[in-house]
Structures are given as structure tokens and as C-alpha cells.
Image (cartoon, each protein chain N blue to C red):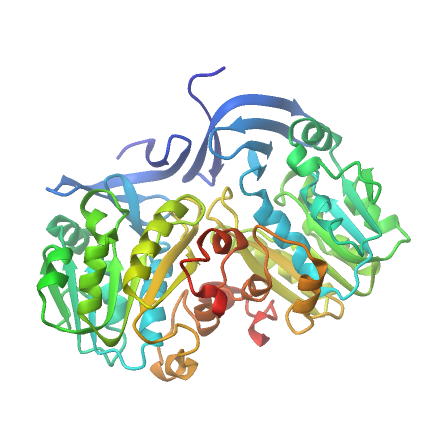
Length: 288
Length: 288
């Protein structure tokens, strides 16, 4: 269609990541953000919100494996899961692979993201019509304030703390998350890059520390985010991500994964020295 | 000097990484490759060979920590080290921080890289005049064929297998490396990206397996290489990178590191499932 079309994500005013585009599949502007889906040459279909790469078909398994299976295999018996954000559907898809899951509620603020992914990226959105998935189009901040349900695991699968996701990085939100977690609940959140956004990591971990007794940071490799090394935060009322991790549950599940495995589960909490040194007052990784 | 100058590294015909440039410090063409050093806005000074990013001041510590300290803390008593390539000097700089090292021979084929880094990137080249560093401008392939010395650790700090580094990925070279390693010697090599170049990893590991009894792949995060997740290969006559790793030696060394630490030493060998599945016949990581 276009002979030389590229899409570029920029970071600050000094870095650009360019991806060759074969076709623009969808371009819209919701009340929250711009939403684009493009077919790239090297990474399959790609979703961008406000011009930032969210998921690509080529590497989405890494992100979705690590945000989902690590908390679900740490909690001994998760049944009721809440996903905040995650409009592409990939996180919900991984959650319901666990046969013990009775319900996965997903609260996505932007219907346009869900609709566009349903139409153009079935690889991630394929589970959104599953009967175990309770899809709510609405504000996750309001949802956790008002719900009377209790969740075993909450996954905050958000964009960066700009635009609609900003309140998802605040203390009031995490106090409400705490309140609607079961007594042994776990919350895992998109935790940014230690290379390029350690200030946001510090800010998020400061909030989590005010609310939760134990906070950890774990990392994985994202192919299409700036810098590659990316993090999730892990905050817990009770369970320890390594000491309470029972490898046998992974084996017994019969599930297979393209990224996650039992060794990576533990290794993901080993952080580079500069990260430990910047965040040591806010993370319990050093006690591992 | 220039109002809007950028340098771009491209991968295949579908990916570009762009870095904002403040000043071009050096541009030359040797008999082997083009050599550029630029001052970037976000990553400090940056060396490029044939247009590919080699090192930047901002993240070089990750690469140099992981290529150097992992083998030097695995070998129980390394005294004589050989570095092939590594013209920027960062690997030699880290080698001689180990007080037990008596000599670090560095064989770099391209004098222009060494001279330009000596002039413009003292952060990496600062140790090249140290009396323990034996700097040889010459062909590493020829050197390992002809030397009568024995080395405890050999570090192949090479560019990609195009241009001058091509023979450094071949079997004849690694047979000669084997021959000039001591009876309990270790060789670690720049091992490319599992996301974008798993075919090169397969090819290099195939060669290593023909020569060495034990071969491993370990990973780290490089900020400025395409995809972020990067690997080194570890091949050994005798020592096992984890079972024979004595953490106490790290503590006793008194050295501090911005990237390397004892937990990462082990965690670096935990690979994503897709990597294990592609390379399981060639790596011993699974026995860890």
C-alpha cells in the first residue's frame, strides 16, 4: 500500500525506535487517547496508544507470560482475578488458561482499544468472549473503589503514567486495590524500565510500600519497548514470590509457555546492581 | 554544531534505532571497517563500527561487567587472560581490576578503533596503558594459532560475524582457542541476540560444541543493542559456571559493580522458554 511507511516511538528528545509498516489497519481517537493498529514488517500486528507501542504479535508472549503466570503460580489457589487495563486481551487470555480460575474480570477504560483489538488482533483478543471473562468497559480506579468483590490476584496492565493511566500510579488507587484483595492477595503492576524510567519506578514503589507489607521488582525482556529490560512490581499481603513458590504447581498445570518457566520465575527477581542500589529502600528483593 | 543530527542503526529492513547526536568526534575508515565516535544527547559518547553501535558511555558497564566478571569469578584463580577484540578497552579495564591477574593480553585487529577510543572515550580506554595490559594490534585468529602461551580465560569481545569478525565465529578459530587455554580454561564470547539472531547463536554454539565438553548461554540487558536482551556464550574445559562458582570470591575481592552481582551470575543462565526450546541440543543450561 505505502512504499516506505515507518512508525516511530520516541523517548525524551534523544531516542527513536522505528518499525517498518506494511499497512495501517486502524486509526482512531477515543476520548482517552489515540489508538492505532498497524501491520509491521518485522513484528506482526502492533497496537499503539498515544503513539507508544503497547503490544506486537511477535513478542507479546513475553509480557503476558510474566505479568500473569508469575503471580498466578505464586498464589497457591487463585480463583478470582481482576485485570485493570489490558485492553488487547492478552493478559485475560493467559489468566483463563489456569483451570482453577473461576472468573477473570477485566476493567478497561477504553472501548476503542478492545473493539479494535477484537477486530484486528485476534492473537491477543481471542479470549475476550470466553464465558469466564467478565469484560467491563469502565474506569478501573472507580471499579476498585466501589466493588464488593474480593480478588486473589489483581493485575494492573496499564500504559505509562500519562493520559488515562495516571491515577493507576497513585496511593488512593492502591489503597482500594488492597481493600478488594483477599487476605492472601497479590497485585502485580506494569513497572516501567530501570534504564529509562527509574524515577517512575521509585514513585510507584513508594506508593506500594505505604500500602503493602512486601514489595518486589522483577524484570523480563521486552523486544519492542525502549531499552528492552522491563519490570513488573509485585506487592503482596502474605505470599512471598520465591519462598512461597511451589514449582510443582507449574508442572501439574500441564501448561507450556514460550517465555515463562520455573527458573525464570526466580531469576526475574535478580536485578542489576545499579537498580538495587537506586531502589534498595523500596524493594525486598535483597532478602531473597 | 548541528541542529538536528541523528545516527541510526538499522536491523534487517524493518527496524531502526535512532540516537540524537550532539557532535561528531571522529569519523574514519580503516582497512577493516568504518569507525565513528559521536557524542550523543542521551547516551554519552558512542562508538560505532560499520554503523553498528558498539559501546556507549551510559550502558557499557553492563556489557563489560558480564563478559568479564562472570568467567573471572568462575575460574578459581585466573592469572593470564586473553581478550580478542575489545578495542574500546572496557573489557581489559575490568579484567585488571582483579588483583590476581598478572597479565591481560588484548589482541585488536584495528588500530584505528584503539586510537580513536584512547583519544575520545577515556571511560573505556583508560586502562590500555596499564603495565598489566599487553596490547597487540593484530589478527586474533592468527594470534591464537601461533602463540605458545596458555591462558586461564579467553574473552572474545567481537563485533557481529560480518566484516573482520567473521573468522571469530568459526571452528578452526575455536580449536586454536581450545589449544591455548590452560587445562581448566574458560572462553566467553559475544553471543548475539536470541530475539533477532538466534540463527547466529545456533551456528556459534554448534562450533563450540564440537570443541568444548560444556557449553552454556547466558544473558544480560544491553540498553543500546536492538532488542535489549543480549547473550554471551560460556564454554569450558572443566569449570561449571554455577556449580563451581564460589560467591565468597566476589565478596573477598572487595570489588563493586554497577551491573554484575552474585545473584545475577546465576540468574543470567535462566533463559526464556523459546530460547531453550530452540537451542536445547546445544546448551547445558537445562542441567542447572
